[in-house]
Amino acid sequence: MQCNNVTAIPKGLLQLRGSLSSMMDSLYYDPKVAELMNTSMGQYLNGHPFLAMAVLVFGAMATVPIGIFLTFATVTFIGATVGLVLLEVFLLSLGGVSLLCVLSALAILSILVSLVLGACYITSYNVLNFYYSQRVSRYRATRLEPATNITVMEQDGEEDEEAYGKPEV
Image (cartoon, rainbow, N blue to C red; front, side, top):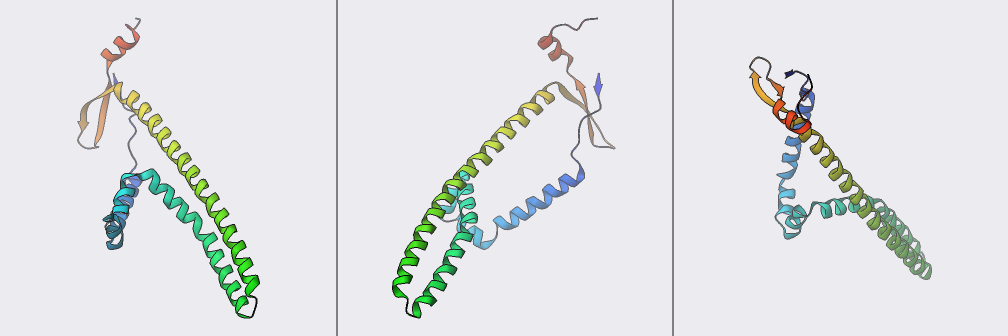
């Protein structure tokens, strides 16, 4: 029995994959990235992708509060030069404690986001791997059509008979 409904990967997806791959290669071989990856920290993060993702999420989420704090500190410093030294110390201490609270919350949030993203990745990988392993095990490649590059698959009848019993006539 022949099965002709084998799904093929569209050309657009293959082109997208190729362009993303070349973009990642150019980024990875950038001299600054190569210099970072040659450090012990870069090699450690390369070996621990979950930690690297958590650091990346934390860094991305921490830029806005740090920028706001630096703006606040600059404005407060300018105000202090006018003569409000005690107010500056109080406001900077208050701002520092607020920044500490915000960055602590962002660190916890970045770890939780990394956990959720990691769990989604592992779950989807296992579901797709299970689905396609079940689908591929029921079919075997018999020949390759030269003009179309389509592999013709035939259902493996022996496995079905062993797994599900003899077919009824």
